Image 1 (cartoon, rainbow, N blue to C red):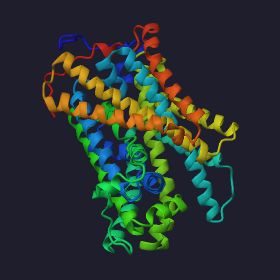
Image 2: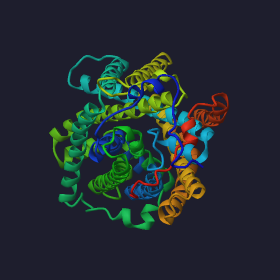
Image 3: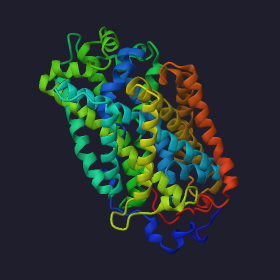
Image 4: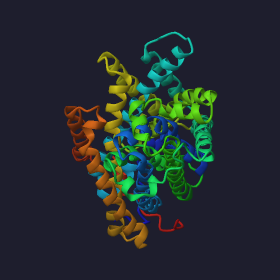
Amino acid sequence: MATVSDPPPTTTGAARTDPASHRLRGTLGPASIVLMVVAAAAPLTVVAGSFPIGIAAGNGPGYPAMYVVAGVVLAFFAVGFTAMTRHVPNAGAFYSYIGTGLGRGAGLGSALVALISYLTVQGAVYGYVGFLLDDLVTGYGGPDLPWWLWTAAVLAVTGLLGYRHIELSSKVLGVLLVAEVGIVLVLDVAVIGRGGGDEGLSSALVTPADVLSGAPGIGLMFAIAGFIGFEATAIFRDEARDPERTIPIATYAALAIITVFYTVSAWAIVSAWGDSRIVEESAADPGGIVVATAQEYVGPIAADIMQVLFVTSLFAAILAFHNVTSRYFFSLGNTGVLPAICGRSHTRHASPHVASLVTSGVGALLMAVCVIAGLDPVLEIFTWLAGIASVGIVVLMLMACLAVLVFFRRTGVDRRPWQTLVAPSLGLLGLAAILVLLVKNLPLLMGGSTVLGVGAGVLLAVALAAGWALAKARPQAARALTTASPADDAPLI
């Protein structure tokens, strides 16, 4: 075990001679980080896209309760995650936590899984946003262009913003997030203010028989997918104003906001149509029921605005995931896993500009492959890639919970039972149950294809296992994962 007298870990090459060029700088507070991680969750996309499917294929009017269940499980995860934050000085998020707790092999494997997960979820949204932009433009009389041209334009704008200082992205995301959340809240208030539809406000979310009806496992599966991105708070550690306080506050705030927002909004949608009709209506028009609800309760202008904000919601998610992914590349470049140039920061923007360009390049390559293969942007690109990402992120959170338990048992630097044993154990059990549901229903997430479902599982398993092989092949890579020292003098959060 390392002690506080151990020398700080170093990296190779230019990192030693020019440390400033390998550091990110910023003064992000909790609010700015919350904006970025909530934007990654794409609230309006979840409301308009996941709600109808979760209701129709899951547990019907009891579906809103699944967001409460998911929020509670992730809160257990967050307790251990934030307790360990002060002992993990590297801004590598999952792979730094897992590597510190479980060793370099597990850390490097989780880094590969994280890269695959964030790149695939970003690719999924790239496909969806191209389709929606084309649909929106043609709907207003514009030219009918191939969806991938719109995707290319979004990719270029995202790359430009990702190249510059993180605070520019934060401001853009703030504006877009306020707009998309605002229109949904207007809808929620309108439905609740009118007392719901003909059947009144739904009580299904607090009725055990309704919550457990239908297929609650599938409902929980779609609910947990709506939280992807909230866990990325730690990746902005180097750009936070006060990491030991900012990261925990941002993590809890993001989780609470997402949980309450999704639960109330799903309940409002169910209430608007009634418990007896919501499943039928959702199944009949999953892509348009939320917009139809806005038109009925708020008016046609609100419905038009929601369609536009649906597109901006996807763009906000892409930008947020781009920022997270580029910081993974940056961290891996700084620790010798990837070429050192990936770990260079821009002298003026203090941004991971090389890593951002790599992220854009990989995204462009992924979309090019999809276009050449002739894949449908929604039915194939979005569903397949989102399925891979959902499983990958849950695997990473489960491993992070295990890493927390092992780290605190091994080091003894924090002996608070709730933060270091009870909550992480409950999170581990909850995430394990969710992972079983995801794996069992992976073919459903992959468009109904068993072959693709198995292939996605094998891809993630191979990436994770490759971490141990990489650790042996590159003995100096990510050496900091085994030499990071606990910050015993930092205040407990």
